[in-house]
Length: 211
Image (cartoon, rainbow, N blue to C red):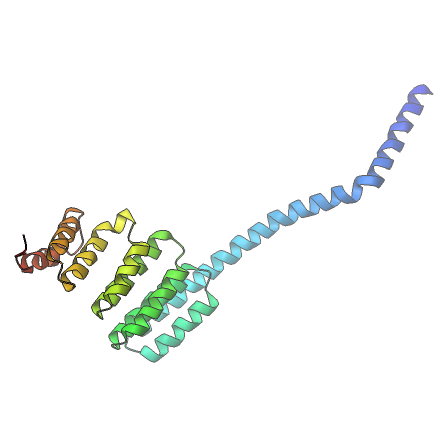
């Protein structure tokens, strides 16, 4: 009987424990399973969203290439609204900037590039958009704005040569010949993409008569 009493006591103890803790245990299991299911659902959702964003972006590129600027602008808006959490919102903003430049609208291009910077999902893409923004600002003669943009985003080593070339352009535009020369040389030494153009700019610099 002693053994039976002990077993009965164990059963009663388990019952009491379950009564006190069973709801919490079930809740924990449900939450755990819900977390796994929720995570898988979230991953599937993100994958589907990215796929749809990719398709929308490809359609945007085809529209832009065909010269449908008005339709392309609407597509950009749709991508930013519907796929704003994907990289395609940033790519769409870059396309909008290109469309604006083709329409001789540098201010519109700047607005689009700032949107691209905000939407960029990666620091390298942020820097790329900022580099384009600085070029647009420089092209329209906004030297102070370009200098500010470079100061904010120009520390990325991967783009150092390109930013050096822009610094050279700004210095040349401001008449700081030796600063321009030094910046162009840094750009060439850093392996700037359009090296031949930078070489020509360097050769075209006047001799600094103050030296």
